[in-house]
Amino acid sequence: MEYIKYRFFQKASKCSKEYQRLKAEHSDKVIANVTLGQILTGMKGIPLLVTDTSKLDPEEGIRFKGYSISELQEKLPRINPDGEPLPEGLFYLMLIGEIPSREDVNNLSKDWATRAHVPQHVFDVIDAMPKNSKPMTQFSAAILSMATESIFQKAYRAGVSKKYFWDSTYEDVMNLIARLPHIAAYIYRRNFHNEEHIEPNPRLDWAGNLAHMMGFDSEDIRRLFRLYMVIHADHEGGNVSAHTAHLVGSALSNVYYAYAAAMTGLAGPLHGFANQDVIHWIFEMIEALDTNTPSDKQIEDYCKFTLQEGRVIPGYGHAVLRKTDPRFTAQQEFANKYIKDDPIVDIVNQLYRVVPPILSEVGKIQNPWPNVDAYSGSLLYHYGIKEYSFYTVLFGVSRALGVLASLTIDRIYGMPIERPTSHPLKWYRDRVDPSTKENC
Ligand code: CMX
Image 1 (cartoon, rainbow, N blue to C red):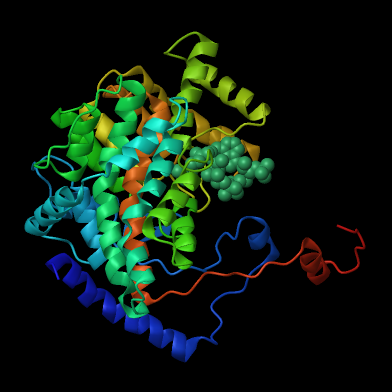
Image 2 (image 1 turned 180 degrees about the vertical axis):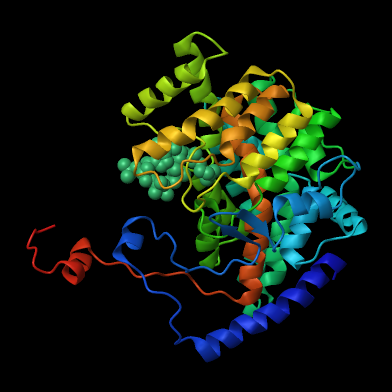
């Protein structure tokens, strides 16, 4: 067994035993009470999932295995001393629970490079779709079509014992992560660069290679992509993409099925689509105001107009966070350091001043502060990736790191099929307001 897999097995089997012990000895213990409000607002705040890769604090934001984003920037291995950490290092941390050495990260880069060959039929599936298929439609379909390669599925059909499910899942996870950059770049070049495709360069790191295959070879873009891939990688287990992969995977669907499903969830406007919506909305505003240097007052009026139309301000609000998302802050710091005089970046900074007081005034909005999507598009746009309908695909490449590390852990813990209980609305009403006789 190669050594990263072996280290995972060693560490995760201890936790797996603990999972099984808790299940056997403490299953009758009560952890939390649930209010009707929590059920009717999307199960918010109910502890229902076990996710070891990262934890989201409403005030402080995300921590990956206990490390904040700024701690990761300090501790994870980098290629250049003043560069951003390599996403390979974060994957290692989430999977194994330890900060990797530079050598561990190099080995992971090399391992993914050897697994990166995408079967031709996946590109054929993409090419068979009309060009006006959204990039996320092509991305999800391509991932699904790669289920032909599932080692887990073959092992399952061959009757492998459930105690080895994690092993073939690990292989599928590593293969899928390794191949995602090529698939994403293929869709990008197909839609926006005349189908002039660029072959992978196996000597590059995972994020650098993605930038390369998209047609961007500057150190600036590589640095941005490494940051981007790190900060979007995971957001504990309850967000739509992570939860979908876990849920579908709980039926022992293979990794390709589970991740394709996750990507169809990421494509929604309340989740990952928001990163393209932000730029789209900013351009709508620029056009409506007929200036790309609007005043605060003009922006304020435009935000109020958006709200009056019954639309959301994209990039603002969050289901869990109650402060500025540290992923927003990390990108703002990046822009402050490397970008000068960019009108879109300036507007994004201006929105940060103007939007929160307006959203707070509305009253019902739990979190008036920006999330990760408020900033990311402006950075990509600045470096020449202007085709914003593609932005959610980049989010999808990154999200694989956390979600698929979790899916491997699910399998080594032997997690069961997920099956919460549902009731008709009347059942809930009879428990809280039995005197009402409304028939629905
Ligand atoms: N603009 C306008 N209204 C907003 C809002 C925003 N940015 N954020 C929340 N609201 C509204 C909700 O639509 C909801 O309205 P109704 O009661 O009429 O349905 C009300 O405020 C309460 O919502 P909430 O409890 O504060 O937030 P939710 O947990 O329901 O939703 C989120 C969270 C992210 C979907 C929401 O804030 C939103 O739609 N934001 C804009 C889209 C966005 O940026 N999504 C990306 C999130 C990060 C990610 O997953 O990538």
